[in-house]
Length: 93
Image (tube, rainbow, N blue to C red; front, side, top):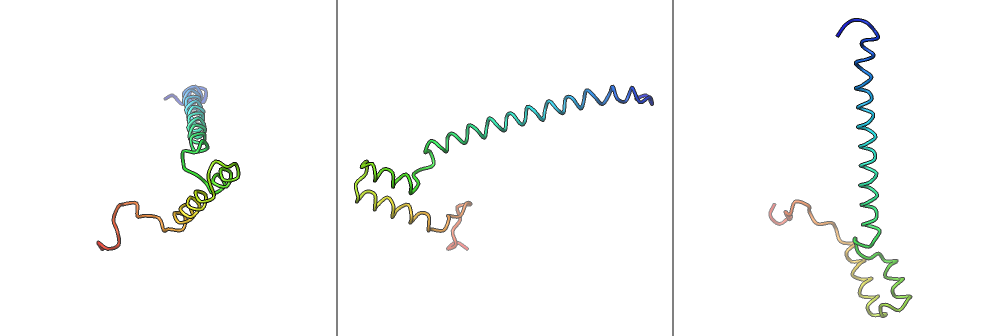
């Protein structure tokens, strides 16, 4: 590396351009991944919501009894505490 300012500029600019390209490519990749994941969850892969059940009941796709059972099951799952992620339970401690 020589001491002249023009030489330093010529050495730094290509690296700055390469960094800018990496940032842009990374941003596009993240955007594509988020868009893909967003459409998967919006398609109903995550299960039914209470509003989905209400809509099915209102349109006649499920009976009153089916609606009650599904609603009670959904509310029961939402009110339960989450299971431990590591697979251990409190009884083994």
